[in-house]
Length: 162
Image (cartoon, rainbow, N blue to C red; front, side):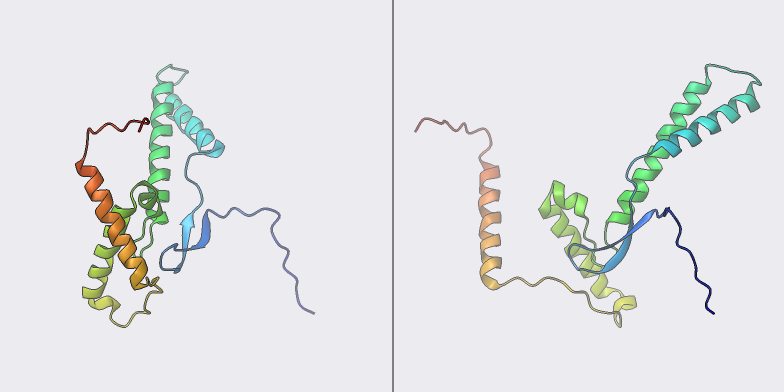
């Protein structure tokens, strides 16, 4: 008779299974982007323990330690999330893509050039990169030229009255 394993009532998974938006490679990224209640609680307990170790009683300087602990925790959680969100295979960074698509494309091109030159990836599975038709490539190229020309004309006022 097989033994049935019961499923846990709640899952404490910190990583999400997802795919890269550019090369469609399966990967794992951290879910948590900012601190939560437990992080605040841990910082409070840590600062109170440090207070009793240093001063032996309540001291208002514990608030400074608490604020520093929260700041350090927030910084490390955001750095961890930011590093896990970019793809290790193709170099695509979705946060950078939302801010500036051209910089994200440059970063992907640079990463792919380094990947081509690296002997570690010679026998690796090829990436599933998107292909662009020649018509679409020409349209994108003309859009970039128009955007570059419009950046040169800074300070020109446009009136609604024609």
